[in-house]
Image 1 (cartoon, rainbow, N blue to C red):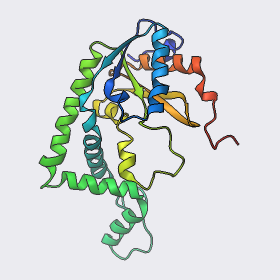
Image 2: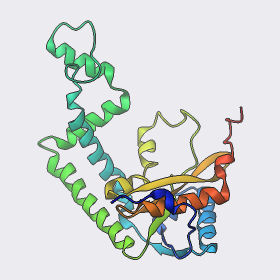
Image 3: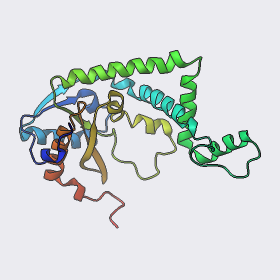
Image 4: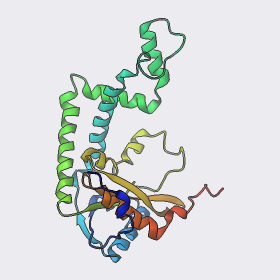
Length: 245
């Protein structure tokens, strides 16, 4: 049965057990981002939440694990977009191979092509055991880590990203840097748990996110905390740098 999630809005956070992974508040996260997030954690504590320091030591492995699995899934799933059954179909083709090659070359963007190539490699006969199979094992260990924390905590909170928001277009040219900036959010994808991000203020005029994660099928606590932070701080009323007009 799916609960009425709106009924949890306005309930407050008194008595809620909140885990804060020390890996999410380490020196790897921008100092100003940590300060903005810590301010929200202190705010929750001042309003009756119980704050516990927890640990997710496998966090350092989530980026390679996620991108092996996600790219493999992308490679497998996007095979159907061949210019015949689904999606874009190239014009001026002279053969069946032409249809396949040109449709996929023209229809997919650089990042999609990159993931298809990574995934095809990870799933290939010589690499499956070395990469995909090992990533799947690490994913199971990550799930177990989260389950252990949720045994004693209702939610987990921390920064959404390790830095404030980028200027539009400023970091797109470096895919590795972009992948690494996902380190705090893709854990939820690997663990199969719900998560949300709400504004935690501005750092040097740019937005900072506050991430809230809950155990499976426990979205109500996410709504409860997200509403409490947004209702009391109203960061959504602030305008980031460069968007005043």
